[in-house]
Image (cartoon, rainbow over all chains, first blue to last red; front, side):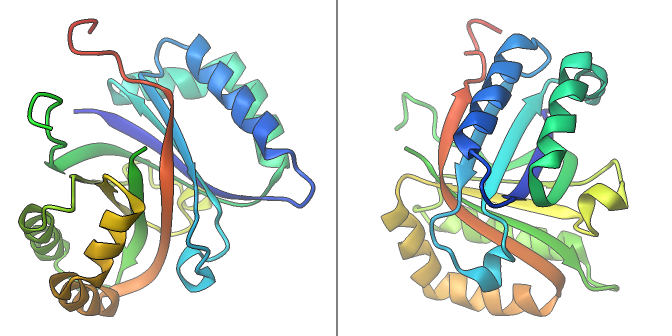
Length: 109
Length: 109
């Protein structure tokens, strides 16, 4: 079962978010333990629902061990120090991901 | 580009979470606008990171219009009323999902 590392964040004012995302994309590309990386920016802007969070970052790993290896990697540690410094608020969840309704296969689409 | 509807929640004490997940899985299965549904429960339990959130629910749609159709569907409204009543806290983000590092294709894996 796939293992996910999910971050919801709000950046501090003045932060160049594009630069942070570029750095994170580079990190994900460099580390083989990262099987998948995607991100999104909320577009509905309903404060009552978002609680002020604006961005989501989602990484997938083949196993909890691969996630642990990623978390312990010196490149991750270096990035995390920079990342945490630009955040106003953050929530991180780590979980095995249960697929309850699979996406249609490309053939079926 | 795929459109995602992501909820992070903490349930009230005494809630039978399995029943809620079963209901949500049924809802996702019934509505064709829901292209994908998956969920997870945090396993690292680091309160400083999770901020007390325990579960993630993630749905994908082919477009923002499909998400809007889902949100406006009477079956969703009925479920949402029940769902909100069992939550202690919730964050919802809606966003086009940018794939920055695609998962390896089955052939490549």
